[in-house]
Amino acid sequence: MGYQEQWNGYAAFKVQSGLGVPASGAGAKVIRQTGGQGIRMTKASIGSKEIRRDGMSTRGRHGLQKTAGSYSHELSIGGFDDMLEAVMRGTWSAANLALTEADFTSITTGANTIVFASGSPIALGVKVGDVWRLTNHSSAANNSLNLRVTGVSSTTITVAETLVVNAVADTDCDLTRTGRVLVNPGPGNLVKRYFTVEEYEYDTDQSEVSSDAVWGSYKLTMAPNGLLTLDTSLVGTGRFDPLASGASPMFTSPVTSTGVPLAVVEAKVRLGSTDLVDLTAFDITVDIKPSSPDVISPSPYAPDVFNGSETVMINMTMLRKDLLALADFVDETPLSLHVLAEENEVAPKDFFSLFVGNFTLGSVDKSALAKEGGPRTQSVSVPADLVGVDSTGAGYDATQVKIQVSNAT
Image (cartoon, rainbow, N blue to C red):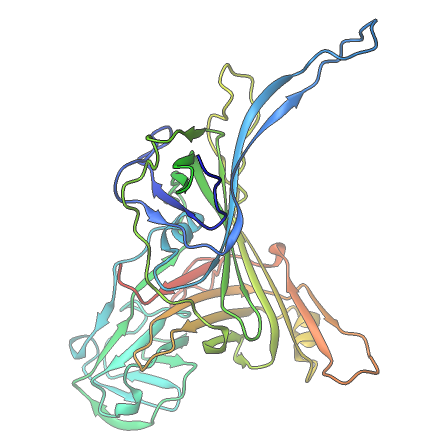
């Protein structure tokens, strides 16, 4: 048997029907990755405390078994929906919520508004932080744009993008909340999902398999001249199997998504009411803090994986041009964040959207003065304690985080 080359393998995962029911066969998805620890099984080492008269030690024993894993990825459309859904403990909505003239009779457009002649955008399901598209509008330049909703009332949708003003009532256009939306579900509706993860090596024809694993966190990161990166992690009960040649791989023909990596240069980051054009670093982490407890049991595994409350943390570094962020920090101003990453294509552009609707800043720190040329920067952080559920009410989702993707499946 030859040695295993470091590139010649893959990791794949599949949702289980429940705890203690490992997944196998068809239907698995390849984890597109750029690195990371992958699956790791550990055991506690239990040392003997015996005091021997020969000056040597009695061999200890193995204790409880633990499993955990982490992966790094380049974010792409459709590549990580199952992981995001698992961490959010929600369920993706049905695709493409569509509104027609039957819902609003006609619309007019302002520079940043879509005004209904009848019907209420709120009652029809429009929420702040959504992304909508106009089609068949009489002003062609308004069509097929990804419109970020910044406000909604009983008659009007306000968007971040600039529209062609058209005061003539349009009775033959459509509005669509493109793709699917994922939010934190309400009380009693959180969904706990368990996964089986297989890491298969072609050269050895063997696999490492971890079952009863729970995806527990994701971190989205952006830097200049880079791709949007996603880091995910999972925790298992400790169940782990090294499969021999002939029994590997366990999954049959896992499927790889085909979306291209999203580039930072095509992403928009909106903080409050401003699109930021001077960021030098950005990251956001969502974590449900899964853990597998130590118990007294004849089994070396934990009985389950236990999740905590969701936490959200945000970090940004930007060129310093004013003291507005510092003023928001001093005044404890509630803010929102909207990240929209689009593919490099002609409109309508596929997209990934992430919205956080209710937080305050935790610190604003300026960089030191220096003799070298270059801009002064400031680092802004939002700790988990300062991010909460959006309780604004009508026109807002009661969630900490909202994700929207343009793909229907």
